Picture 1 (cartoon, protein in one colour):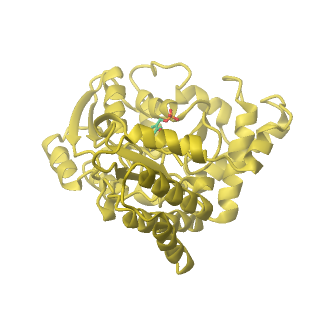
Picture 2 (cartoon, rainbow, N blue to C red; picture 1 turned 180 degrees about the vertical axis):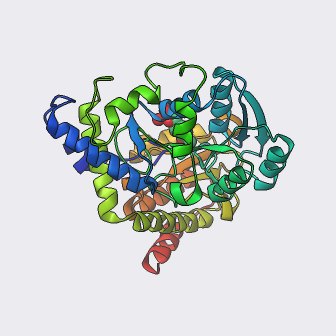
Picture 3 (tube, rainbow, N blue to C red; picture 1 turned 60 degrees about the vertical axis):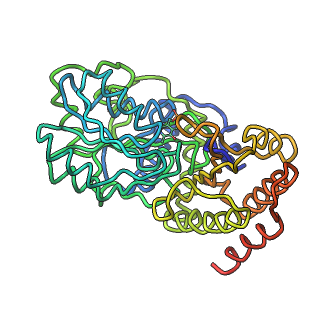
Length: 381
Ligand SMILES: Cc1ncc(COP(=O)(O)O)c(C=O)c1O
């Protein structure tokens, strides 16, 4: 129950163990077509340029920036946690000019500040923001931010590493131009793959670049030759065959459950965990209406050694919860309820393990009342 990788479903680990075939084998190529459609479903897009980058979320991030940002391009970057900071670093490395819009860690990106930045910078080409900030548990209003970008003729780059499959995300309806995610969060697949998708407007910008994309591996003009739908596939790199079987299986599972049902399950389980945490007297970092259901950042009570609590949870209950990052290091725990890990048994284990551990360390808490509060929510949803 950390911030990812989440628990991997046995169906997915079984898929990993299937025989490794050639990555240009007709059977594998057929699976690639299916995989592309499944990613389009998960992202809710018809974008032709939709594929899994053969590397983790950070490579998907880099693919979006390396392809879309050219030297001198002005990019508005929203920073409200660790990953917005990484977006800024990407823009700088591409030779772009950053206009930073800052919000406090633990808060969503403020659309009013973004609007002001767009108005003050009519020459900005791109707006970049993180939909689900894993470092704080804050969710930003991607729909509203994309609408603002469109009104100001800007493309959007959106980080959905933690949101995909766990909370509503509608690429086409919201008009997102470039999006990247990760396999290891709400898809509950093994880490190491990054689904990405680019709109026609983004493809046009990539095709009309003045300079070649600096990264050969991530150059979408080249990758398209391997992933192009139905067409003849040219060798680009050796695809991670078994990891792609696993991603395919995880997306089939998501499709079987249904996206809306998956979003609902993550929301219901978050409500149950939150009810139990409230009984334990633990406060969230993020205000209620901006919280991500799949990443619960709670404040460590005064006088408690947060690392010792995590050590005991791991040693005594085989339960992992995450530590704080950056500004929140040492101050919070990050409890994941992602994908296959977003389940009743995990919620109850977490509340009783955390409650008992805090009690042992001198806190006046009632773990049984916390689990009862969570059950009450789950049984009446
Ligand atoms: C919001 C966000 N963006 C990007 C990344 C980077 O992904 P990866 O660690 O798979 O490279 C993460 C990883 O946790 C993340 O949470």
